[in-house]
Length: 354
Ligand SMILES: NC(=O)c1ccc[n+]([C@@H]2O[C@H](COP(=O)([O-])OP(=O)(O)OC[C@H]3O[C@@H](n4cnc5c(N)ncnc54)[C@H](OP(=O)(O)O)[C@@H]3O)[C@@H](O)[C@H]2O)c1
Image (tube, rainbow, N blue to C red):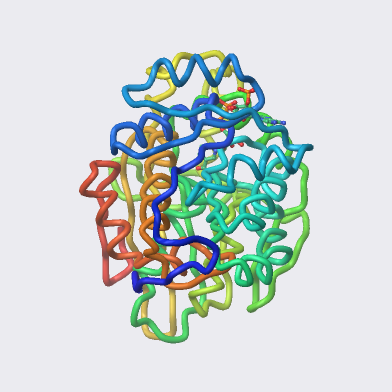
């Protein structure tokens, strides 16, 4: 992978990277990373005052542009000269299709931070033809939840035949949700899950009694929620020939003090989360596993999206269309680039034990 694909929608001149929803917590982290990389950028969102204030705080020049989700012309004005738009305005069930459609109609690549499986599935179903016709790449969930497990699943299953089950297990502590994360979580609670069982996507309530899962030390054996709503349930089967894909999440992630009452926390306090993501794959010939361990899930998500945007702006996607992270980029190279950046450490195990 990582071959050069030339988009049909733009010439060779490099355009800016646009950030929609730039004034939220994730948008600010994305903008700061773009500034640190010296990227030309456009900050977009619904409040000109907030956008101007953010631009004034950055260590690099940035243009600002107001755009409303219900005004497609204003969104097109954001994307028409940009190489890539990173949508940070969640929930994405509200913003995603509008921003992605504007991007496609102007030949601009689109990334977002969605962790909403029904929305992720919808984007694949609704925009695939249009993305290919317009020579653009669309990657929903190019963030902490979504992309990292998708890439890790590709790494773990490389060379494995007849994969039976891929299990993604998250141990997250210290997650203090932003306003949009909380809104998204509350919307997901009670919404149908996307399930992938016996080679077929299904939509249904999912869930059931918590199970236990053994994470690498020091996390250890923990109670986990089953059928955790995760976009990678949609994306992993696109490139891993597994019979089933499931996602688990530590139960006590959601019972910690403050997880749902931290909308107004400052950025430094919100950075105190820690994570382990395990991906385990079983087949008739054995089990393989890998895990990522790091801190600050919002920072990890923001840098992941900027890394992808930089690669798309440099035409470094394996193909065009609505893609998962691992369909667009070499999992090995992408994850190792993030490891070098200090986002996490990666450990691989050929016998499945972590
Ligand atoms: N997949 C992952 O791992 C991952 C990681 C990080 C974040 N996320 C998701 O990304 C989203 C943003 O998170 P956040 O931490 O940045 O939340 P946040 O701090 O609450 O910021 C939300 C941003 O979205 C904008 N927004 C919300 N509704 C909008 C609307 N109707 N029109 C225009 N703009 C709108 C807000 O604009 P105003 O400032 O004008 O209110 C703000 O800029 C959430 O859905 C979260 O779940 C996912």
